[in-house]
Length: 444
Image 1 (cartoon, rainbow, N blue to C red):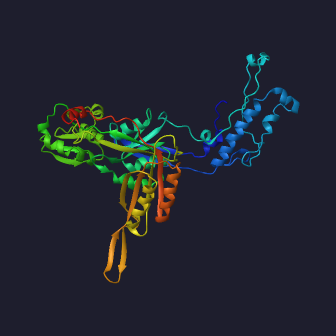
Image 2: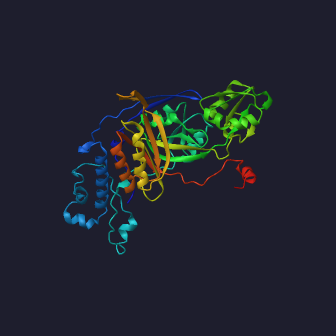
Image 3: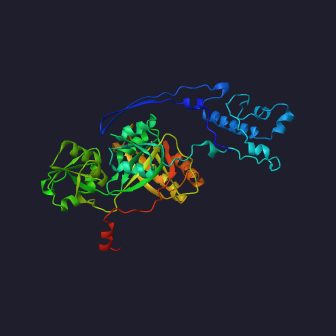
């Protein structure tokens, strides 16, 4: 069956009119007028997903009917009768005009009467056909925090090859870019093997309604960059992202740099800032690609304290993906309870009982209720901090054990939300440059 596409009125379901204004290379101002008006399709087709699926099913039925032998149509007295008398789908009558163009038969087929084969029934549409096809990065707009040359841009390219990377000056802007249809995906860091969790993005995951649809782990290879001709002895300031500064602190001390550390928004932005202002007494910690983009020289290569430095990024989308069981999946949830942290043991036992491995537990303050007061007539009033708990576990929501575990967790908690069930990053480990030297020193 030839591929079918929804009729043109479906494209008017959502009509975003975004405007992107670039003020400077490292600042992105987003202005968008979002419109989600209800649209009435011709002949009674509604605007929800069920109606769209019905239209797809009717289209498929019309194609099958039009490809029936012509003699069958002639016996019915109406050439197009087979196409006009398709059974109703989801309560919709098939008298609607879906503008289906009949497929013309070639001359070779019409002349070869002796070689006519019996009609093979077409495979009916399934939920897989109605869902968007998996996108591998082509024609995708992916938002990331930072400027070109940032590690987040490299992660976006690894997650979605050949995508159009959209730089954003803040994590919040990347979330909004996807929500306002300016971008299709967002790739944002959530944790680093040396610096730990990026708490800001955990808070934003709870504030926004985007879904985690994948993860990617990117080895981080830091370099010390300066303007051409500058020597290390002239450096009295090193600027970079706070995480990068923390990941290179020991190495900077070993290099003998008596320089002040200053935090900026991102690594590549530090290199851009030095190049734009011709700062010959300042160095940046960034990637080798940032050095190429902004005309910097590499004073020291591989300056991270641990060569096994990896940052985990998550891919965010407006709609969740359908969980599967044919490959390893990971599920991320967040929950809270009115009675404090005493419920945490019960929640963990729900996963342990079903042999579900947890890969991460993160606690963040409950912003709406940061402190809980407990009155005791004997000892007085006690104050306890309230927390939201983030958990990642290795199971797909398509598995019965994961569904039963969350059903049990829901009994103990006052708030539970699934942030996403998505494929795990199973790509082979690609160590940073310099790991070979470490292996020679320590073969174990």
